[in-house]
Image 1 (cartoon, rainbow, N blue to C red):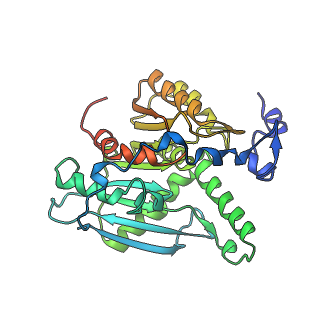
Image 2: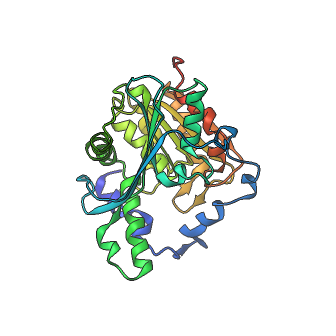
Image 3: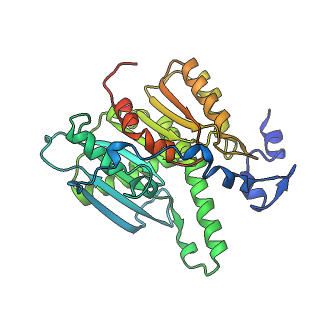
Length: 319
């Protein structure tokens, strides 16, 4: 297909930029995704035992509520939180995990509770000292001045999609040029340069974004955790299975998760898209794992298996 035809069919423009949220085609709308956010298939998933400890955290959490120092996505502000493990476990540079939609992963009442799991595994000797950076999507500064709640939400939603769904190097550049240098300066912390000890994690569009950052920068991030990843036709991520099959293999280890009741909307089927990703990774010889459960488009299944996911993603096993 040539570029002119591709553009004439509207394939270069996200569905939500062409239609209002309630617009229907064949009796279907983008809002159908709401049906997958909490399903009967999720009820048996609970935070993993490692996340349910009652001990106080010994590590530190630093939060920056309206961080606006980035240059890659200039004119935005966002919340960034950083978990640093407790001292006394050696003086080597820290392993690193970055979480898109970070607060969903950090919350001590959420389904994943990342700091607790990291600290438990560290104390058990199952994980090296690991820092976590929880990055929220940017909100355009002009949105903060908007009095209409719907307009403000729309601006923030579009910015999240631009950052997370775009199949370009921009988000990886944002992490490398803006976020990591800031955290290192601000907290005087040293992260390992070993890409096998540096990973990106996210859910939905944030999961696609995690893979996308590693795809463009495998020498910086060689570990990917994608929960219900949006490898669908939002901004072109549905092409990744073909790219994986047709591109020389990159030194990545990839964890994918989805479920029977994951999203199935106008832009694609998440269960099918993740199966296609897993098949492509297998075809190309990637070190990967695909956990397919019964749940929907949320972090319930992800939280139930998160400790085991970390054990696998950071294991010393060879592909």
